[in-house]
Length: 403
Image 1: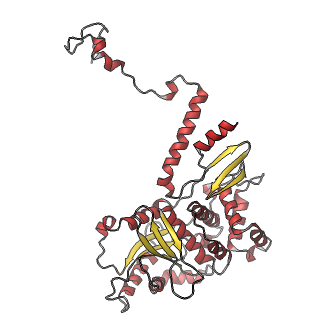
Image 2: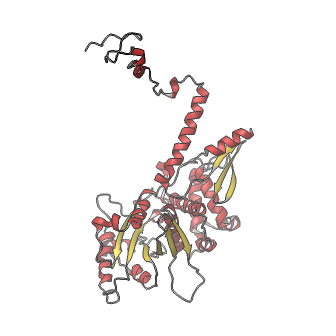
Image 3: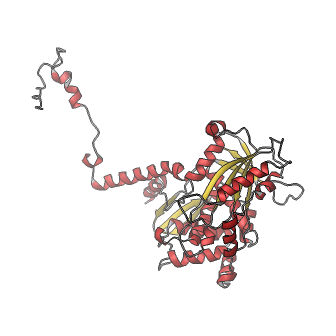
């Protein structure tokens, strides 16, 4: 199609308004339009600086979508040092240290450097499991100058991810200003580590989902109680929290084979949690602590077995006719430790079910239980660990002003 001849600026406007073209429709063609910054005429260095700041701001806005409600650290590199925040504490790092290296150092600092050195002085088999996991990370990720910069996803194994996930959960609890000292002490105790590790994951998961937690007094032996009360910050709704993990002292290959054949899965941990009094709606977290299910074409067979076992529990006399004794049950399996240093991160499982809630309608679940639904979504959406520092624009500007 032929293009019409351009209209002279002082010619009558083609729209028959009686005005000159430049005072009528010509203004539309002369209107300012946005242009790419590369065409703005700004110096290249300024353009690159603006792009960098924009990328930092965008990443900070995307953080809640990717990693949940716990805020990122504030950090900046200045004069050869990187300053990083965790909670109310600022840490100075070597400029070349990685984000993962910072998380590892943070975990060791919270456990106690002397305690960690004492564990590392033991033979490998006698060390605390955290020291064993750290040894694998040390061999795989530490560079020639002592920084942890050699992380490669294709070289990830169960123990390295296990250690990193503990470190990140510690960081999240510090950002939430709620890291109990007694929980740290229990992590250091070999016989209490499994339970304490799962309680840490549950607490960090709730923090990432926008909850604050008031932990129960573990020294109170006068009554049964759960882990504490979780309050959803936005809605103010309170929930009674319990976290239980199936204890397996080691990976028994024969028992794993028997479990796969007989599907020996039951809901006894839920029954134990339901024996404790609760004034608020119950959220029960259960980790079955089972070997990973390698097949990707179907769910692990213990999942339907667990559901069946939970249904049988609901039919027991102590729960029949007791509708107030109900709970939402979050069932997980985080089998990092089962694969040791042999192969990568195994497939994990998570599902939510309800106990003794006969009137529950899953079709309207989001509308009927919006806070629990958001928690379910957060567990699925905010499971990843950040891979790098999130630069802070305000800190960068302050450092530039000082230099």
